Structure formats: C-alpha cells, structure tokens
Image (cartoon, rainbow over all chains, first blue to last red; front, side):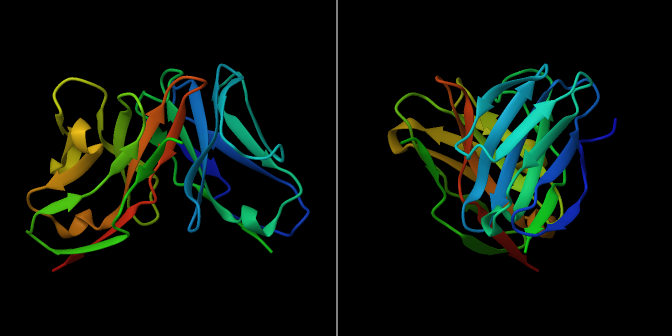
Length: 114
Length: 114
C-alpha cells in the first residue's frame, strides 16, 4: 500500500506570492492533517480535515487555508507569503476522524520563501 | 496552557548503551501521549502511544515508555541503542475538548556513536 505522498517536495517562492501544497493520503484514509515544522517553533498543528470538512484548526492566521476533496486528497494554501512561512510542511493521514488514531506522515514539502 | 516539554535538545549515546529520552507534559486531566521518530529525510513515524491502562507501553523498534502521573512524565526508553536509532524524537500530546489538537514537544536529537 502506498504511503502518504506530498507534492511538490521542494518549493521556492518570494514574499507576497501564494502557494498550494498537495497531499494524497493512504488509500482508504479519510482524515488528513497538516503540520508546519520550523527550527524555531518546532512542529505545529495547522488543521485537520475529514470528509471534506475542517474539524480542527491550530493557531495560524487566515492566510493559511486548506481543503479536502471527495477522494480525500487535500491541499493547503498559503497566501501573501512571508519569510517566516519558510518551513517543512507535513501532511498526515489516518483512517478515522480523530487525532487519537495513528497518523501516517508524508515526507513533507520544503517551502523556502525569499 | 497545556504544553509538552522535552528538556534535552541533543543526546549522544554509544551503540549498545541504554537510552532514556525525557518528556514532561502540563495538562490538567490525563493526556493522550505519543512518541514519534523522524529520521533524516523521512516523515514522522509513531513509536508508541498511551491512552490509559498499563502505564508501561511497548512500541515498535524495541522502544518502551512509562507514564508517571505523579511526575507528569512520559519518558521513552530503549535498553540497547542501535546506530540506526539516530534520529529526532518527538513527544506529543492530544488535548481533547474544544477541538482536538496534537501538540508536539521541541524534539530531542539523538546521536549514536559507534
């Protein structure tokens, strides 16, 4: 069974631009969560989607948004990029809609904002 | 506020030596606790979790962790470390109520000397 895939793996953008990251969960998994990992702030929870609905949200500004499609694939969008948005963005999928379920993480998308 | 603390940023052990990684949490009720490992270039992988019951939990790769309510700790242990265990280890807690949120500690970087 294929694992969680994230595209692209690397991305370079400039301040003010917007970016869309994609995550394909493990087949059969319906929950997708997103995390931001930076050296300064560590791993921070962004949001969780299940059945195309956002169920939980972390403490990030509205520039960070996401959505989930009917096939459970998810996208995350960051608008008006700032230097501080440079990070590794991790996606995780799980079978059910609870962060208590084991989450399977993808390798991440490394975003660099110049 | 609820939090997870990993006091040790870096730890170096010799191959074959025992390992203990510390994790302390700050939360009023019994938390849902996890340990994850992140190898270079890899996504996070769940090592073990504690929800309730036996306070000593066994995980994958020979790891175990013990929940101690009196010390608000959930330390990760391994009796004999292998060179392939070199990675970053994250303790995490799910705070329930008002929307579940997965909160990670800052991580402990483990180096294994041959």
